[in-house]
Image 1 (spheres, rainbow, N blue to C red):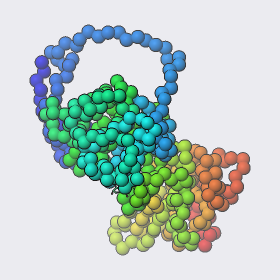
Image 2: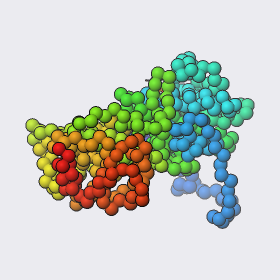
Image 3: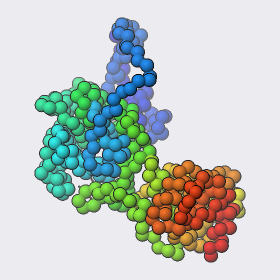
Length: 456
Ligand code: TYD
Ligand code: MG
């Protein structure tokens, strides 16, 4: 048998190596590499004989398989992000920063499922039963039939779940508290996390139970983060938001049973999370007319158009290296837009401090936001307010050209629905035959600057 040796595991991405290092070579995190017990000898390694296997039955690709039934919670924003409800027998990871509202969302969803007569078990490893009850009371759900267990030992959890009728849904809150006494590793380490999740997923597949795993995103690497088990589960959802804002966004980043670019929008209130059916009106609702540096970006989040406000502040800098501060957008992308503005259109931004913010604590990753960002920057630099009823979308190339992006029709429709009047976009955009908006099409950034100059 191969000799067991010590191994070092990155608590952020799970990379295993045979020596310690200050920084993980894979994910770049610092101080996240921890020595973890002994690696199990790999069967099939030198010296071990691979057992003889059984051939499996081959089936043609063509042919029908039954579509899996779905378990709908009744919270539309959650069901849609999950791909139309949860699939029985699947493993779902819900990741997010501590305190963002994961337990709140799941308590609400589980109470709704229990009300429909489903057997629902909430395993809490983090909070005492009394705390879970207190939360349910705050949410007005204290009479619900959700069953609770305060347990962290994986063997005991599986023994509990195996008793009686198999549960339809189980919540494990959180994966970081799972541990198994047979492993020589501390709770919260990659080894424990993987082993615990694997055992529970095996249970889920056997019994047809949906297991929802809660995972805290960790920054310091003291405990392993949800990235480590992303590949083991069928669906990965991230719950995001800024603690200073009440909006929360549930985003699917992996889904074996549905689309991955879907988002759900919630608002945290004193009575828990409320669904936001029309997020655009919320995100652009509180703008003031006549303020330079604000542009509305018509974005797409999955199948849904979403209007967001891009705010920029450009002011002369007293520093040798001007400040660039970005919240909710990619810093590198901002540097690129600034360089293109300066080089291609002669707009002097290199001597200015630039601050960029996406209102409401949102985060944009679409390149289609380039044009809105550029418009907000030029507007702030020149002190010219943009029309309050205009939307912007388009990608900016290094040449300074404004490029068309997909789904123009849906973006325009959303703006029209909210009573906006104008759309500023790339001249080669594919437009619907009829649109109630005034269209201003641009070829490049020079045309954008010239148009903004006509507004003052
Ligand atoms: P929680 O669901 O415990 O977060 P997580 O499980 O992601 O760590 O919720 C955390 C925050 O939400 C907490 O700071 C209090 C706030 N909260 C409300 O604002 N309203 C509510 O009704 C509830 C239950 C929590
Ligand atoms: Mg929690």
